[in-house]
Image (cartoon, rainbow, N blue to C red):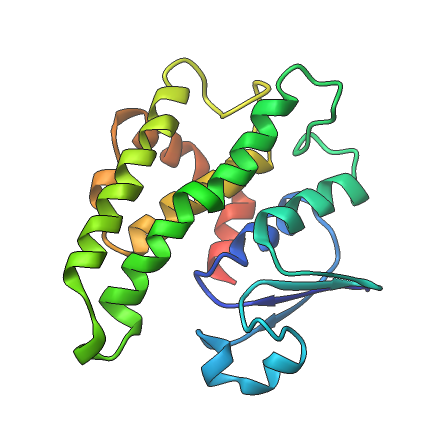
Length: 203
């Protein structure tokens, strides 16, 4: 077994963990308290950034959740979870993968930080409220995309859905109930029926 994934419950490491479960690949999971850079400081020797996830596969070392999911489908495929450059919706697929973190998860991390992670005296309700609105405004692209389809691209479930759906999962944990606009709410119900999602959420 070469794949080793460092994970915290509920963190962005859920994306590659969910991908592994969907693909049925063998892996070793190391689960740590969050944030590990403070609560498991020896982790900094493995990933000096102190962030999760971190994935090792032989000589390959990666720390970006969507990138790790793409690595799995490209390296261990072919799999319906991935698209290739010849697919008509390949550009949309890549756009969703990158949008999942740069546009959607980023503002959520600031909500998390300034409502829960910082000491009480350093919390900032205004920053949290501003970035909550930012996240919800950007989730409109997901609501719109799902108006005529069950999944985000190629007419099937892919890692684009894993990466975007994690943002909904995180919103739920942050009590951002407004994320469940009509199309997103129906999409979420489809997502949570997937056994691999359920296993990853439990792990």
